Amino acid sequence: MRRAAIALAIGCGITGAAAILAAAYFAREVVVPKTLRKEDLEIRRVLHGADEMLMVELPASARTTAPGRYSIWFANGTGHACIGEIVSCDDAAGTVTRRVERVDSGDLMTAKAGIWSGYVYATPEPLGLPYSDVQVPVENGMAPAWQFPPAQPSGDSSTWAIHIHGLGGSKAGALRGVPVADRLGYTSLVVSLRNDRDAPASADGRYHLGQTEWHDVEAAVSYAVGQGARQIVLFGWSLGASIALQLAASSGARHVISRLVLNAPVIDWGSTLVANARSSGLPSWVARLGLQMLGSAGARWVTGLDAPLDFLALDFLARADELSVPILVIHNEGDRSTPFAISREFVSRRPELATLLTFPSAEHTQEWNSDPDGWDAAVEGWLRSVPSSSVSL
Image 1 (tube, rainbow, N blue to C red):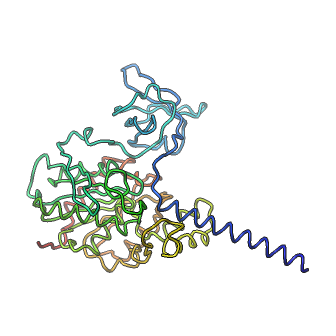
Image 2 (cartoon, rainbow, N blue to C red):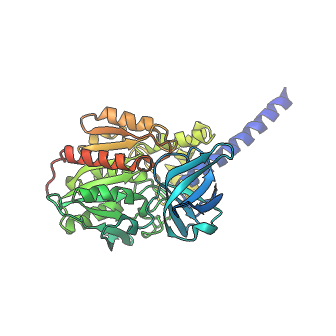
């Protein structure tokens, strides 16, 4: 009995140590910026059709056979191609052939592997809209941004749209919302954030899940107001949506924020991270231990954060009553990164302010990609029909 007890105690100790290590690894994975992604999509071949249409043959999967417009990054991120409609499927070979709408950079003909992405626009040029490179003053220097004047200024020319990208992404990911804003006569500002490899890094070089990043977007709001903006519509993608919520609730400039368009929003970071961990096979209690590390000043040696994360402040299910602007929430039920149920619950708590719009995509932040025309029409219709909150300068 005594030997069994000793063996059990040793086993529990090893298990406990393993759990702590797993939680520490999870915590660091959440906040440490990633610089490399694996090119895990095989490019079987690139060919020309009878009409010289360029096509790419890929292994068939739920991603590569989804309707809509997507892109492939290749050549270690230096190559980019926009991928369009499905031309054919070969069930026996397990392949799908899709149209290549354009190649923005790199030699796709020689590419053997790439990364499937929702970033249809790697740069502003393919949009065909006038723009300029500008610099937004932020805490640690100047953050690059793209500014798009409206092609046809209207009565809404004093309304600006600020487009905010997601975690681990870049400002190119937010370009998908610019054409809608342009049709409405808005000026668009597509911004960069600390630790996204464009804007100045934070002192600790760590993601703060919007807890500090929102100050960079607040600086962009101030920049826009200085350029004549009287109303601001925030387009937020994933983390960008969380940042938009922080601005609408907490910013000293919230009086000029009139509406929010939130795509695949992270509304409650704590619940979202636990759900991600669970879907990856990590026990929920281990993930919650990781969250405790992220929220502890004493765990800086693990996380590298210069200040702990406040998951209560990052929970807009709990803070929903602090919001006072119309909100469009765009999400898909199959999103495995940001639980759709949280978006549905958020809208149910503020039905007088929030509207939920669903799209068929099963990938995170690819609602637009699954139906670009439908997304554009729905967002444009909502912005035209929903009166902005009262704003004053």
